[in-house]
Image (cartoon, rainbow, N blue to C red; front, side, top):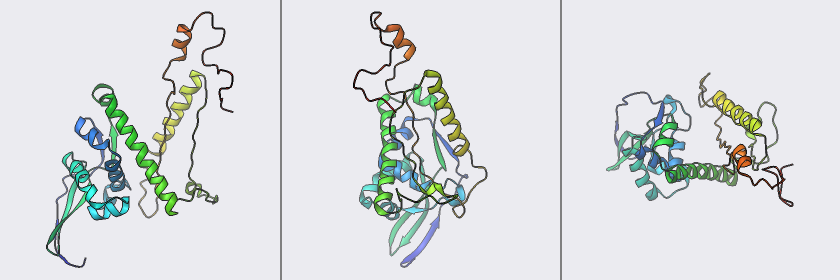
Length: 245
């Protein structure tokens, strides 16, 4: 690199792997769309040997954010151990630090969500995740890197985005079946790394997968609490309501 005077590589304590989030400080650090976008970029390939070292300048260019805006986010991610300094470079008399992700993937402990995290914190993290995916999709579509109308290529349908917005109405048993089968697919394709694919022979996919009960009401409980003189089955639509086809 032009103007580089010296490079100091920091020792790596252990090979990064899955990090379980079980403390409020780390959870809060993730609950911001910019910091979450930084983490997603730095953990892009999910393999220890492929984690890239990033300068703040490079991250700013990749994310389309002002460089000055990222410094406080980088500092907070470093303080919580989500990233670490990998190299210190002296470039033309100016010290430049390069960072690397401290893990290849992140998992949030269900017990922490249920027992420790506040509702607002959980909502913030959910919002940050959705916003990070939206930003990535829109930036790719607007730049042409993502073609929303890509033609089907035999064996390469992964190049076409798969999007679904909407609602459906299922029986409780079918709703449970749908949710469980969806979770099984996620575990089969995302929860394992067998065989391990490198950046040269693997395809990076960005995913936003979600399923939740819209009303939050239990149909059985709703039937029990329904007025006895209401002849309609609970969950039926009023006249003029839009129903899924």
